[in-house]
Length: 489
Ligand code: 5AD
Ligand code: SF4
Image: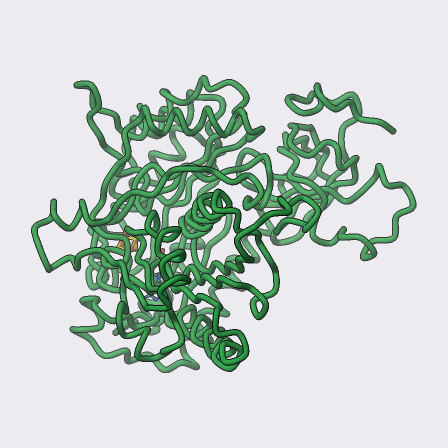
């Protein structure tokens, strides 16, 4: 959030925005704020005093939706005191629940789906002047032809707002929207619409703009990013071609991409990651389960053997490439044996880390239609904890192998633990800094905060399950910002 001093004095009111969910949502919020700032809206951290409140929502699990309804509940009484406040629910929940949100929370003014985010500035202005409610959502996936549905989900990639990014040196870039995989548990094909890839020339221009704003690392986003495929000027671009196409953008030091779909992890892509030095040796490829029956029920389109074959190709092409995964525990019909097979998969492939989720039944999905949510909550919780313990043990053992080595780190800035007052340090040039290796491992070390945005070498001295702990190599090699802002002290 920005400080009041940096804001223009003349403004059209205060905006409070809260974002839950994935990186795609973080990017959407950045773009919405950039557009609203053009209308001189100023950001505030105070939801109750804001003139406009936006919730950018997630529907992947029920819990994320409950959080939003709780926040809306808090605003209900406030709106009696502050009737001019415009409240908008935007993003996945808006697309999924549509008018239902007005029924559950009648004080909401705007409902705007993921494919209509460009409408928000106009809708806020109209809501303020007419005091009437408005809704803008895309067509349902069964409501019309695929092309008609696709064109009702407009890709929203306009202005960028550096202030909304977690770090000024890192930015997300959308390369595709939507998903056509229809895994049986997942609501995303409904909330984000059909799969559509953006033209490479648009993506390259955006990366160039970001580089001029000082961005060093771009993360390309797509629900199934490695399914990227588009023809421009008669040439077919796959993700491997796109990586090569943006690789020479000056100022960009690192390129990452998430999230990969196992079946689309082709050799050309692995070779591109191996051969293009700016592309990070890190692949997030969710397995979801280690049991063939579960994978079939999930309609993932691969077996454990297929996943194994993919892992073998990754390891053969890049022995040191880090791989991370997602797992769902307690999916409909998951027996203790099925669960143990997922545990075996983690033991076999030793993922760098895994995101583990308890199955949450979602409306409009096949699984919800066909099968009972038959695994009790306490069993889901136990499986979740057991899996987390196993993964943490593996992550720590793998991190320990880095002790005694030197790693290259892109410095993000002072660590969360080193906010003013938490760590006593009399030397302001030596703060606890945090950054990441090319294989996406978090590294903390002491250093000058001015190193943020540069690449430095760090000797690894110790580790935890999640973090490498090190000491900066003096006389290190650096790029970028350091040339403009010499390190003092
Ligand atoms: N319940 C639990 N987890 C889910 N995910 C997607 N849908 C569900 C659901 N209904 C998980 C998957 C996906 C991650 C982003 O969220 O593991 O990879
Ligand atoms: Fe959901 Fe499956 Fe698409 Fe991922 S690939 S967004 S899990 S439907």
